[in-house]
Image (cartoon, rainbow, N blue to C red; front, top):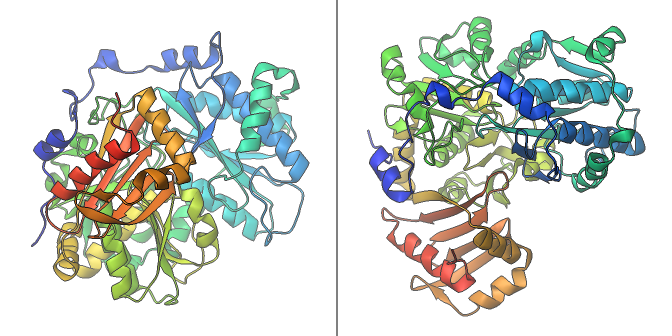
Length: 560
């Protein structure tokens, strides 16, 4: 078996790791429902503006995110929908029709409970039918996408929204919208403009009390979990699971109850550990910087379930984040590296699915270039996009991809017959696909990745996240908006002794050297951190780290 994932010591050495990383929070440090309620409903003296980033508007409860933000943004969605028929992008292949239902989901945060009610009441107050998961339970992001696309197929002109801050800490909150294509909304500038006006003059916000909305049929409780689980058989081949044993955990997030439902429906031997929703993050462990994230690709976060895979006696334990759009887990080689997972799953999908050979692999600018070599082996193209799943939506709808993925542990794939599944990241389907691959091959992900590097050579990769100073983040943002300046600064330069092969400026600055080594500098769209991505075709990251340092100097990013 060939697998050598980074150890905890290696992660500690690379990043400025907090002393709490990998430990559980003390009871006195946990958020409470009462505190979140008080902060959500108490409007701060000065309201932070609404700004939709990579995945909706986000902010800390009581500061950048309170009831006024949710009400204003929802009213903006309603006003735009009334004017244009949709608050999402225009779609030439979907005929104009009267606006249909809105599917509204939420993650498990305390704030999300309050915000979903606010959003539903404003949607209902504007005359729209809002469909929410019955019994007040949370709904994963991919399930909302699935519900929208299923409704569109029935002729209902549906859209959706999700109250979630994804993997962020429990006192953060977020709110994002999905248009008629089921994917992340790409038409958000108009939402920001309209919502920020309403934020300072709320007189135009219409609202209908929850109970009145239910009585009038404007707020409707439905089963969103059942149709999604039933339809998974068209994405995952459950017939190969016979005799296999696996485990999974929602990590306290909105996938709670989903793996149990999948196991019951398809007769799987699947053990669910830490199965309950955890709005306070009491059962989680701190991430590298001492924050209680729900990122299942972080070894610090996955310390929360350390030892449970062995206790269950299974080859793989899968995991998801708060809104279940990210995948993660652990096999005999350790906590899964998302890049390695993407490489293995792409290779395996090329082998086990009979799809058109014209289909490509979609990868973001921060994803391993080993994928390019695998694509060449299978005679397939590579489509590189900026970070953000919104760039994949059109390709997912028109059958462009074998798989679309990003290094931050997100992917989507077609149905087994090649038709569109969902147009969002689907962490639940991803975990089940990993299980299918292991059941088919008898090998875990780390071993299969070793097989790939034996064929294509090793690719050393790392992403180092550091707190972003205002100066450095502003400089990087300016460079990303001024590609000609980047080209001028790098013209004729050599980096780490190598000629520059190509430069990509957009969502950050990416430089690819003649040797295949590449470096990417980008600011997070959801947190105040700078992400430094590096990869080299070889075993040692020395050249990539040197290139990163020299690129900082050349671009003026070596600032405090």
